[in-house]
Image 1 (cartoon, rainbow, N blue to C red):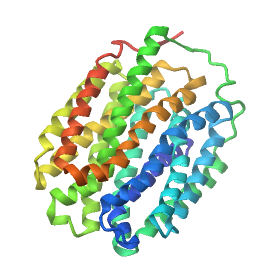
Image 2: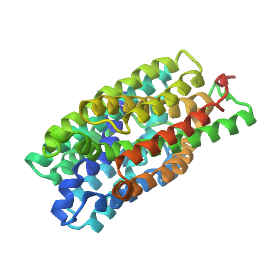
Image 3: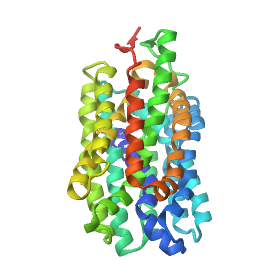
Length: 386
């Protein structure tokens, strides 16, 4: 198994782990004696806050200490913290354990993705495949968690990926050679040349679009399970069937990242990014009052555009930031954007309880509109190597 495949699997586990709770929240609420699932959702906020804030030190150590070493911390830290979550007995204990897991989950994006790209000849294709792996992890979270909750219990849904993650970490340590120098110490023969004013504008657009995209990602991936339960009454009482349908949405939507990745290698980023975020607006508006199979089709459609927008974050960093500092730039961007967008997870339960899912989808359409406006400020052309 190559380094690239192991990094793809790490991305899948990273997103799988963050979505187990959202898929199993109804069963956990019953076990903990919490009246409504909405009241339990705020306890996962810490995981998503740390997913953002811990990206800053993770990116720094990835560049200055080494990406291989940081990925080992990711594998073993994630695995151990997932197992720890399974032993919790109260909502507060679970909140602390999920927060710890979120800190380790923060390592992958600022470290693993630059590690993938540092030798990639076609970065767009690599970003697309990595995105597909991450989103298949989301699909597997729905499928695996739904199955385990029904047949074994919610605790097994955390234990199984935790042990798998540690096993992959041991294999990663065995097959991936040690780095001779950290990325910050390596000399790049073809550094990127970017005008300072353009760099500032690109980073501003990147931060805004990633923050808004993160809000949409957190609202949808954390809320789709309960949204599907409300809008598709035929599967409301069967967690395994619900998980299967939810996994189907994510699996189909994930294919968009492969297409986007190929397009990134052929065209300037703005030309592809702009129509995708604009399409999010249309899909959300159409889904506001849909039910049954019509909603299922529209949910698949809006998730295609939400997932399809994800590769652009990494593509922008690859096009406008030199490899010697990509982990630090990615860490800074993630700390700001994911730190803010994590509030969506905290707000999801209370917001839906107070206003309903139709209002939530309307809000997501407004957020997508703001993203479209921000993308319009991207440069028409990308940076070039010296």
